[in-house]
Every structure is written in C-alpha cells, then in structure tokens.
Image 1 (cartoon, rainbow, N blue to C red):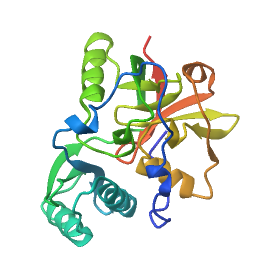
Image 2 (cartoon, helix red, strand yellow):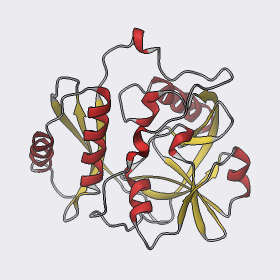
Image 3 (tube, rainbow, N blue to C red):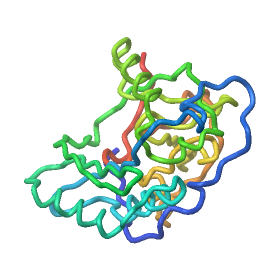
Amino acid sequence: MAAARVSTSDPAPNSDLASRPGSAGGRPFRLREPAAASSPFELFETLRWSVPEGYYLLELHLSRLVASAAHLGFDCDLDAARRTLAACSGGLGDGVFRVRLWLDSEGNLRTTATPIIAPSADTIYHFTLSEQRISSGDDFLYHKTTRRDVYESELAQHSATNGCDEVIFCNERGELTEGTYTNIFIRQAGRLLTPPVACGLLNGTLRQALFNDPHVDIKERVLVPQDLMTADQVFLGNSVRGLVRALPVQ
C-alpha cells in the first residue's frame, strides 16, 4: 500500500501525547533508568522532504516537538525550528530525503539529511516480536527522544539473526505497543485498528493524521500478538514511509 494521502492542515495532536496510566505491574523491561539516574538526551523529529511536497506533515511534527519540549522542560523556539528546517531543505536537491531535526535541553537545534528510496505499493516489511516487555508507565515512550537503546539493540539483533525489517513490542500486560520506528495498524472488516497511546507508544504524526482525516475509518483498540495473525492485513507506518504492508518473518 502506498503512502497514505492525508491532510496536513488538520489540528495538532491531542493531549493523549501526555496521557499515561499509573504504575505498571509485573516485571517489564525498563526502556529507561529512573529519573534520578537520568543522563542527557535530545528530542528529535524525523520528517520526509521532497520537491514539490516540501516537509510532509510539518505542522504535526512541530506541534509534537513543542508539546514534548514543554513537558520535559526543554527550551524550544518554534520560529528557530522553522528556520533550521528551511535552511536544511535549501541545500537539498531532487529526490526524497529523511530529515532529522534535533533539539537539546538548552534549545540548540541541528539537522541531518539522508536520501532515501520511498517504499512502493508492492513493498512488504517483515516483522518479528520482541521478547522484551516495555512499561506503559515509562514517560519517555510518549516522546521522541534519543533514549532508544533498547529499540535500537533489539532491531539490530533480530535483523542480524532473521533478516526482519522491524521489531514489534508488547507492554507489561502483553498488549501490542509499537515497532522500533513505526506504529502498528491492522485492517479488520474494512476498518483500521491501532493500539491506544496509553498502551505505551509514541503518537506518530502519520497515526495522528489518519485520525484527523474524516475519510479514513480508523479506531483505537487494545491489540495482542494473536491479532497480527488473524487480521485481514497488517501495516506498519510512519510519516517518512507511509503505510506499508507487513508480514511476520517466516
């Protein structure tokens, strides 16, 4: 399935970004250390840029960055962020690029840009499930930060052993949350279903844009691994790649 066609002028992500349940039970794998032992980190946004589209879902990305900065106590100058992105795109040529906008706690901004090949309508991603459990009570899951060691190590390990493109996580209750760089969607009886943010996941900008689009039939629902096997279709998606058909690694 090609990248979803969604409006970029819809309202910004809702306050679900900051909503999270109370303490988690069981013994989930912690994605982060306790706050008292925290180390410096950055916020970042990953955007798709091309001619003549420009930055895809730009306003949703900037709204999320500003909301996360306010929640985590980072300085964030929205006008400076726009200027930084404009300066970056001014040096890009033809093609499609993945642009990352980085923000540190003092408000310093930087960008990196990498040319990419966008998935085609025939692209299929192969996924596997992580045995590591994440905690839905981990505040950092709800914001896009550089504290991604568990996600990155799991993807590197599994892709090396079974060739998967993505690794999917569950929380302490065995509920599906997200992939290392994508949100999870299944199609059931014509409707798209995706895990609630409160399960412990980032509200991706593509995810939010799909909810904002009145022409898309999409609903939040708690999902478990078995749903990936019984769904009519499974998709993994983000704003850089769009919605991509997905199958489990064989």
